[in-house]
Image 1 (cartoon, helix red, strand yellow):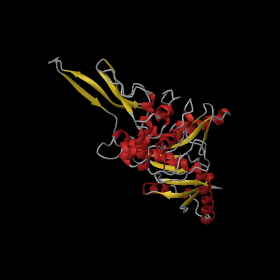
Image 2: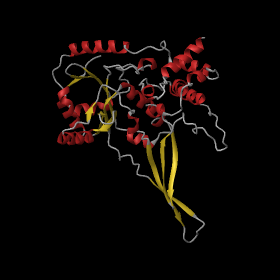
Image 3: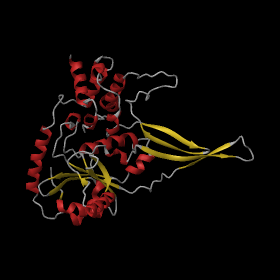
Image 4: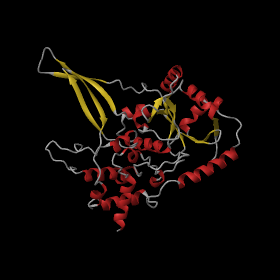
Length: 374
C-alpha cells in the first residue's frame, strides 16, 4: 500500500480538536467502569477527561485496537427515533369532522457532518451495506440520509486479530478500506494514511498543518506490508473461499433440511446477536398518544423475536426458533446477496462474543456447507 500522508501519534489529539470545530467527531472510547467500548462524541470525551483529571480517577480512554461493543450504525440509524408529532384537530362547526396535523423536526440541514474516527474496516463495510438499504434507490430514507450525508469514515486497520474476527471469510480483510473515506494504518511512530476518497479531500486539506511533511515512505510501506501479511493469516478459516453467489446457492439447498434444528439446539432466541450486528436493519413503528396529541417513532426490531412474524390471526409462520435462526442467517448469506450482491455479514464477531450460550455463526455456516457436500 502506498503511503499518501502521515500523522504523528502526538498530533492526533490536536488534530481531532481542530476537526471537532468543523465536524461532529466521534471516536471509540473504553468505559473502564462499565467494561464497554462505545463511540462517543469527541467534545463529550474531552469534557469527561477534564473532569477525570480534576477528580484524579480515570474512567474513559480512547480505544483504537478493539472493536466497540455495539456497532456505530446507531449514529445514522438510532435504536429509537421519533419520526414526527401528530395532532388531531377538531372542527368546532362540524364535530364529526377531524383533521390531522403532522410536525417533524427532520430538516436536511439540521445535522452537521460527522467524522467517525477509529472505525474498524468491518464497521465501514457494515455502514456501506446499510447505505444500500436506506440511502439508495427510489426508497431513500430521509431520516437515515440526513444523518449520513456529509459524514466521513476514518478507518484504522486491525493490527490485532481477536478470536471472534472472521472478516476474510466474508470477502473482507483487516486492512480493507474499500468503504472508508480515509484509510489509516498504525505504524511505529504514527498513522500512515493509505486512502483518501474524494469525499475526504476537504478534511485532509483542512488538517494539513497536523500532517507530517517529512516521512520515510519506503520504510513505512515495508512495515505495512509485513502487518498486512501477518494479520490475515491469524484469522481461522472455517470454510474455503466461497463466492457470494455460491454461498447463496448452498443456503438455498439447506432451506428444507434438518440441519437448522441441529444448529439451533442450544439457542434461546434472546436476540442479542441482532442488536449488536452492524447490518441488521429491521425496525418497527409505534404511535404513542395522549388525548389528541401523539408521536410516531421507530425502534429496532429483530427476527429472532417469537412475535416478529406473529399475525393478527394468531398464526406464526416462524413459530420455531430454528425457522427464525435460519431466516437470520439466510438474510446475511442468501437473500441480501440476491438483492445487493454482497454477503450481509462483515465478520466483526460481535454476535459470537455476546451470545450467552456460545452460538457461533461461523459454525452454523460451516455446518450448512458440510451438510450440503454430504
